Length: 112
View (cartoon, rainbow, N blue to C red):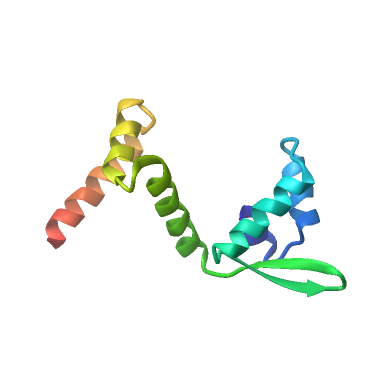
């Protein structure tokens, strides 16, 4: 998704080339992932000169939100508190991130 967002539109070859710069990845793996992202509604696909061109189907924040919900459902059975507890216990949150979480909790409490 990052590659497609950065370029606004990409082919499987474009995404494969960009990802291959940082790590080895099979072309077929990229093709499968892009098909799955399309099936989930995160990408649209059009044919242009015999190649499939993919574009973001939704705004970035909406896609990220959907992916986070999918992750929470698959890994934590939908429980966001379990993810937060895991991050806090494994010291994965920096002091700045902990402060942001505290501010969000305060704002949420004030809204309720």
